[in-house]
Image 1 (cartoon, helix red, strand yellow):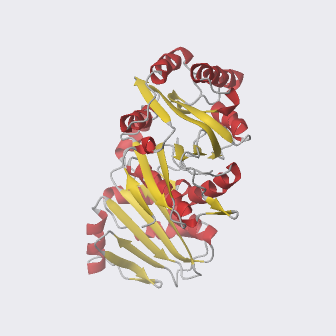
Image 2 (tube, helix red, strand yellow):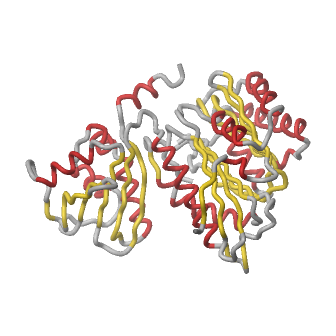
Image 3 (cartoon, helix red, strand yellow):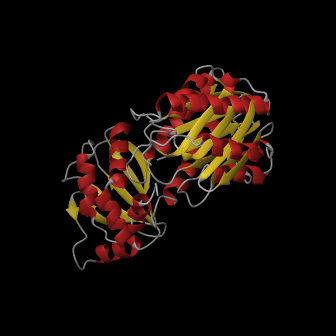
Length: 406
């Protein structure tokens, strides 16, 4: 077995301290992981939050010893004051934990365009500093503290057996429920391994994992201004993850599994979501086209609405694929709807099989009533494939976002 799942979130990692606290909608989480090599990926939105700008500068040195995260306020579109607020919070962390300011990353999530309520955040932070620990409840408290419209905290931890038989651990927490269409919604993810990796190798491994996970999920198609995924390696195990310049393939697979697990938890917890959608594209010309087609399906408001209503309207699937930018032909495409127990072709090699009253349509309707709807599409244009995940679009999504700032 390459890896096994562990309980406890970030607490499975040695030489780490973590805590979180919340007062009303304002939360603070702190992760202390001293002298870690680190790298991160961020939103590609042209409007970016102050903490993203600040942390990008910190990451340039490849070292992170602590992460400060607040929820309830995005500190975005806040001008020079937003940067000053970042500096104030970093100074606070540095003073409390005796950590150099240039090794402290900062991240925020919440309402855009509102001044950071420093007095409230600082008050909550004081409770966090006094409760730093390395128990499962400490990791859970941090995962809870960074939630906004999330209904559940999201964690994952793994023990990985490398190709040479040595073992390392990797763990992460994340938040995200709405404004999810990462393009590296509000999506924040903080991952730690106890292995030894340099910043350049962390960056390489993380980008591969993110492109297969966080960059392949959609709740509503809105890309956040604050998206951040940070990976730290604190060297506590004394085990090298990189050998002869190559990242251990078992570690890479485990990192991808962890990121996909956290990503799927986000879409399952999507704002107002009642069903999860998995879109699998096969037979694309290349990987870029397969990803475009998969994401188009889980992004389509029409198809997401159909999933909510239990309607196997495959016309909305083929329409989404058609405008995705991927090469597709009506004469050759195959579209199927599935769950874990059944799969039914709606269109096979361009031939429609799901007419009104057909067994194919009746089976598809039953599948669409479940909590997970799988869409399998073969473009029959090549060998590339990709998977994207999303959720249905419900009445509750509109209600949640109509009342978000009030």
